[in-house]
Length: 214
Image (cartoon, one colour):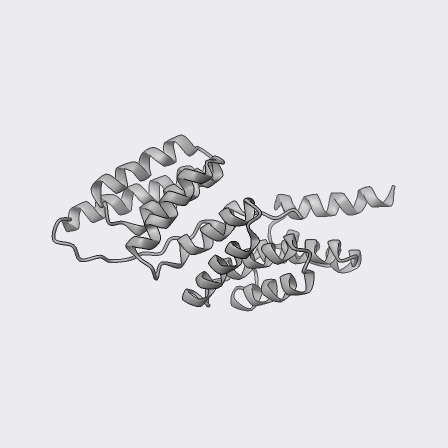
């Protein structure tokens, strides 16, 4: 199943921790470092992203977000041991931060530990039921398990929260495609491309349909 996960994973949970050892200015510097690091991560410049998240942690060692983002970057770099360590640390610092739970779900899914991935996604949804990303990402897990009806239910929840969420619209198309309904798959990919004409996963889906005609 083709799904886009990187963009699905990047959402910043702003938190405030009152610790006497860290000044307000240090926290401000850390926030700036995190934002710059997230830009590098989104651009695929992982080494620069790691450097920025390292700086953020040096400014604010209690930043759950910094560890979450660095863990996500290690995930993208295919370094699961470092990724898991950082995401676990992020949760230790703030158990109610839903982002590291969601990203752990993606990590365990990539390792084909579907049961643990499900636990992580479920926890993320419990903490942030109004965020479309955990719903979408759990949907991709259901799809990987070939539970396409469950996947579509989760994509529907994501779209109820954010009706123009191109990621879930596209994944909905893939769920229809792999369940054998190419007409509905086309409808969803065309819908995604009306919102973002250059969205690659939807373009790939349309190309897949065209190749089937030959």
